[in-house]
Image 1 (cartoon, one colour):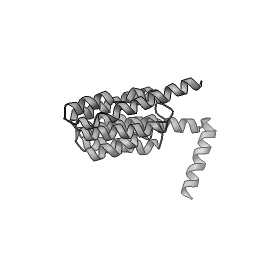
Image 2 (cartoon, rainbow, N blue to C red):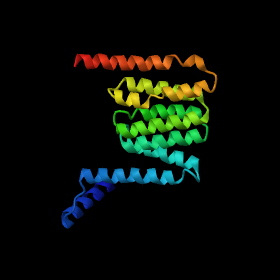
Image 3 (tube, rainbow, N blue to C red):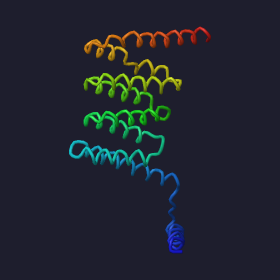
Length: 192
């Protein structure tokens, strides 16, 4: 009952003073809340990584399954987890971040993926780098973003890392995958 009185009072006040909150304004308020949460969390990255991670998780929760803020928050989560050397969490958060492929800006997506590959490659965690590459490759296979696949293909970086870690057995597979993608693209061009 009390909630009904509050709703009635809000409606009466809106009619009296001539203002009305539209759904668009409410969405704008929600977006602003998400943005504020994101930047508050980002401000904690240096001083309190644990609290920053919690804050970024809240951004993901608030943003739902799509949207730039969730993607940006997951990017920060992956970077923080890398810094903390929590590699299992890196794997799961990275997979979650890739679930935003269809809703994220492809230019931003490319930059983020390449940056994460660079961070992982400098960590010396070659197995993690290979796993993230495979995860990215699989995620991009299910989209029509071939250009992004080529741009984010870290074959050369992985080859460089393997060559410096005596893991030469992994090398032949990567160029073969790249060749398959190029040939498939050429066949598509021939059909057009």
